[in-house]
Image 1 (cartoon, helix red, strand yellow):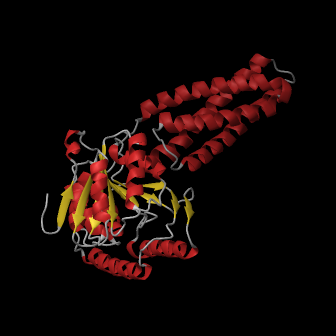
Image 2: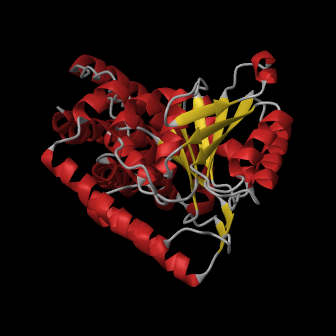
Image 3: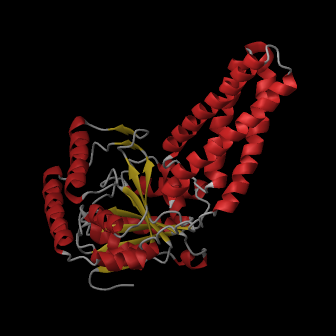
Length: 409
């Protein structure tokens, strides 16, 4: 495919290779020295570690040295390597052209200096291939990232990302790391809206993706600064500031079709859980009674197990406290149909109030029994406790229903 601004070069052997799942673009301008080692190393890594058909696209941005000749030699030497030549400079222009023409479902790019460790490449693209995420970026600012670079570049990078957070309310952490990937269907929707053709291209693409409700996956990377980098920091910073201003105005004035983007590309909202039908009083009584029977049996077992070692009153206190907490949780979920943590603390406080009243009833019944009979038998003692617990259970139901059922409705 050739026109006045771009030309493709690809070896004939590509026609017999499987359709690529991943297309990794390397934008270059006057990189005749680094291009060969970069592409050979990347090709070897992809062949050894990426279990999908791939291709490498060298996007030459109007190089004035032998970069294009080196790229064409690489395309002839290595399978699945192709070359795109553009007559105009601009990393964003190169990425837009290469990604727009690619048939691969997942598109990526990386800088020719390979500052980013290639071990992060598969984690970068796997969430896009699986459909879990829509875009993926390498980040040098995560806690687990390992970065080697000078203090000046570190300060500039962090300042730029803080500026983006303050002006454009971005949530991604590292806009300018030269290690990104995007699903092709998402790229087709976003690229026509990205105006920048230079270094701000990445930021503009990510901001649009975020505003469209897309999922951006971040991968912590190991990154070593290239001391021979030719990026003009001052010119790039000025262009980025202009880009922030332009994009900010477009967002404020509604010039961007964000609603349409969300409808076209955004992920559907999560389905709300079906509304729980309130349980009527008869069913509540049946469920409460079932929970109560289980709680009473557990209470009696605990009382009998601890009565000999602790005495009647301490054993009663311990057994009632343990079963009260479990009883509140069971009634909250089973009797009144409440799940989740909302109001759980208040409900357990109400349960403890009911526990205190139950404790007063059962302790008073035990004390009254021992006043009437100095040494009551164990069966009589248990019978009195059962009656007292029944009274406490009725009181507990009234209190819990007032606190949970009516507040829930």
